[in-house]
Length: 245
Image (cartoon, rainbow, N blue to C red; front, side):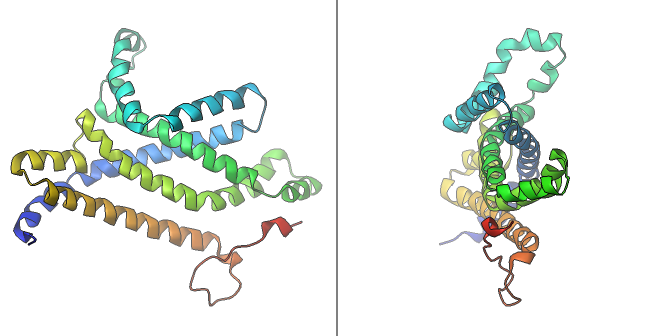
């Protein structure tokens, strides 16, 4: 039987960790997106830089996020004297910034591959048309390639945002009291793990469902011109961009 009194007691405490969860996820996703876009564009030029980017992506996609947090949180401490010399130790001694750095680098690796694929999927005919119209490479990228690529990347990037929100739960291992960290504290007091984790899970589920709806609404808004008629219920209809000349 569900103990509503117990949930009424713990849910406000769990929700109190939600701002930190959102701060970690929002900051890492924002910084990660900017870095991912830079890396995705960098892979289209030269030979050495793409090789370095692919190495970075392979490392952060091929290792667990938990290991990355441990390496940054505990490993950077070995370089304390060097960081103090350049004035960065005050930043890296804080668990928040270590967790944010790990989350940012992780989402950068995944996001760069999402954006690289989306940019590569933009039909070459559009670039040729832009050159015929006298647009520079920057104007073509800014006005044609990136708007199309970002719209195509939106569903996949929405999934990456959800993964980052769930990934913030690992920040509790470096003493950050977000939702999962608070849940662990409540369990140590009450010894009622199932009820507490169900409550925490409901908070994550509600948050991720909200993000899914927001991303879906944004996708529909950006793809409004792809709908065949007004009876599609707000859902974008797939378009054959390959036929654009």
